[in-house]
Length: 129
Image (tube, rainbow, N blue to C red; front, side, top):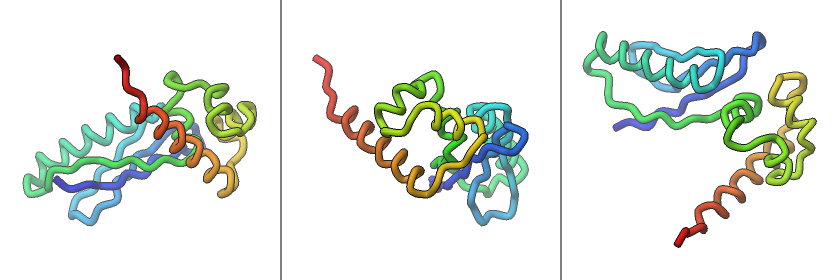
């Protein structure tokens, strides 16, 4: 199984693209109106590519998101008020990032990443009885 990094980005028209970073002789990408649709389309495109090129190795996708894509992806799991608590960034500003009205600075992206990492670590320590 080969781990392949997939970059997911929000396009100017509000759609999303999932582009795998690999060096094989066949190309495939995913596109959709949502991040989930782009991820599903990528998996379908990969399955079609594997049919055309059976020597293509089995792949496991590891996703990297731009900020807008990440915020859209977690929408419905965590709301912007939750993310404000987790990251310390105002939910209205997070909304601007999610809709593409503005782009976060590299320092802000780092704050979001660190907040999510802390929250993830807190969740890993939970044990239900």
